[in-house]
Image (cartoon, rainbow, N blue to C red; front, side, top):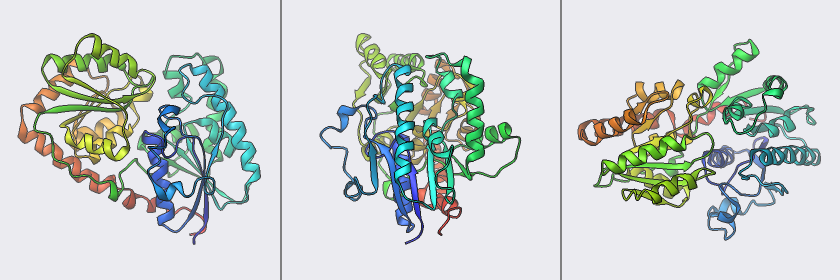
Length: 397
């Protein structure tokens, strides 16, 4: 066996969403590479607690056997998925304290890998390090506090200078930084006034997850995953309304704090071409994406959200499905430059609908984009190909 590595993450198997899947894949890749990973996380509750009560989503026997042994779940009093952001803040603070206390009980690890968001886990791990001999890896999947401020649901501007200082200290305390989006490296280095190399490890698909499902006979659009505060639910409703008017089928496999707003609009307006589907397991979701002809990703039009790389976009590329999005930044450039679909920062509903119709009416264009997504997937978005970038930096190789 190689060195021991401690993983710290709010989200993990069997939860839904790209964050939990990413940490599951990291855990499994570490094991395959001969390391001894242990993860400290929470009880599954995303998108909600009720989804995991009957253990249907606990479908990985290898991971199930490690529960309580190398998968440690911290019990919380506050709710992770509370609709009120102030109560979520209380949850983050409680989690930070409990993780801090738990870390004092653990022995020394050669490598410590903490992922953010949420930012409080990084603070609990990197500030006042107990194990000075370990190498500390900080993974950045989102920019905080910028993204939190952009939600516009809670006012924290009075404390923003302190939060930005704490953010900077977090970057300085890390021995290595892992990013899932090249833009984050530019942002962090600008803040630090340095030109540090970072480990670019994008969300990806494992070889065992690869699907080759044929497209459905009827042209259709799919939206999967979270409709939270970062997603523009009103534009998503407008797109659904436009697709329904054009008699174009759309499947919505959704959850999140604003998902009911979308469901209610579909039902109240009688959008018979819009099909509402409950959340599903990742393998089922990837198959569903691969059957459709277009995949949507619609975010709030703020600078922070325009520069992220949503997991649903990577899943769409990996499933051979063209992407249509109102995103900009690196991800938007990637989509357009590699001919993966259409992306434009702040794209209007009409622009999005026009492009979807263009693909629908041009089978040759659709086939070309499907091929380019698969080619890029094989080059950039396979876990087994990218993982050595990280293992090469670990101690105890």
